[in-house]
Image: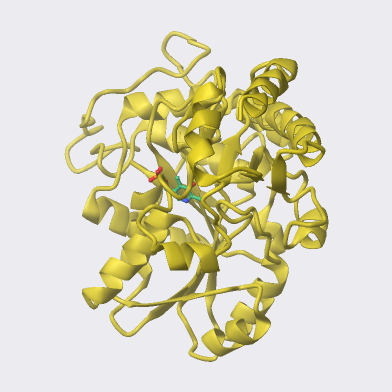
Length: 394
Ligand SMILES: *Cc1c(COP(=O)(O)O)cnc(C)c1O
């Protein structure tokens, strides 16, 4: 079961910015509509008896999904992509498609909380085995790889401390053990990091974040550089039914058009906020890959095309002053997503990492004074003024 519009792409040599802007344009043969239509039909008329057309049933593929998959595959330099109804469903799909009960997956000890919970719960049910390690610890990595895992998940930079690990180095070691390398590229997007050029076999994104960029839909995507693996996972995606709706897919294509300009502008603002926070007397620490004090900064300099727009910082304050600071903010909204046009702030202890014991949080370097920011597209002076007045209030 292969999809057929992916093969001869006219945009192969174009820049990512152009690919994202032009994805799916001018595909309407009947009316010449510039913007692709939303195809709501779940079924497609056979061309003649026994002869399906390119599309037959919407769980398998639709014009909207095909178009976004092609755009994202091109942005990552892959051969194919599969869009799903959330980032978690993409990770779930891949684990079900690739792993059997005796197979092992290695994931970072500080991976996205949802991935941690998924691997943990499915391995407890016996679907596969999972092991969580600190991938910057070469001995732990070598030990884990000596078990010949089927899959290793790399997530860099990490959440919420923005630690960076070396994709090329881990991929090389993993391949020596016959292990497939999956990179979660959600935080960087294809604009700032190219995992396939660093040895990855498969890329996953939560499109809910930067790829859509407007915090109004859930979607995930798997991108492949091997067509055989893609076809195998595509069979499973149809088997399980992980597809998302045409309307959400249409919105995602719309969001993608501004991906490059959003990511670059948000990152520029993040650097200015980092600069402001680093020099502020009420800030104890700032975490951002641009800083030499952040673990993996040297790797980030060679591996990333930019440092991104997520950062975290610790307030020099008692834990009970945190609510006061956050409530004083007028622009930054207390919410736990990222990558949208709006600036968000989150408090890992009470939000994303509340399920982890205080002791485990402490060991992971997540203090009660830690706050994470996703920098949006608001005016940078307004953002800094907002932080300044809230810091003055504590
Ligand atoms: C949000 C996120 C996911 C999960 O994606 P959903 O779309 O929320 O299911 C996976 N990985 C990372 C790094 C994320 O930030």
